[in-house]
Length: 69
Image 1: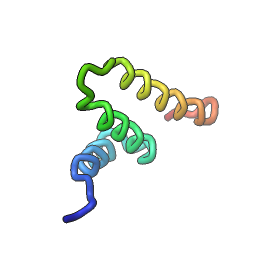
Image 2 (image 1 turned 90 degrees about the horizontal axis):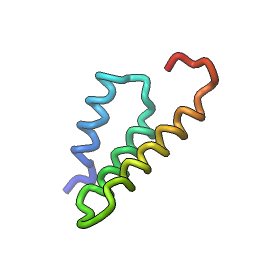
Image 3 (image 1 turned 120 degrees about the vertical axis):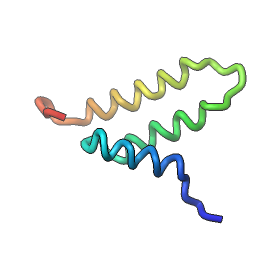
């Protein structure tokens, strides 16, 4: 059996064709976050949103000021 996560591979391929500027490491972190929260029974769904917001904010903060993308 392969260790390849086909859902992650499909997500990265779709992202590459639609938003090629986004780094793979950001996309992978977002995917892992969603995967970890996907089946939490009775969990606070806002935790997943907060985690994604944090990842995006960290990415944006790491970009040089005035960068177009």
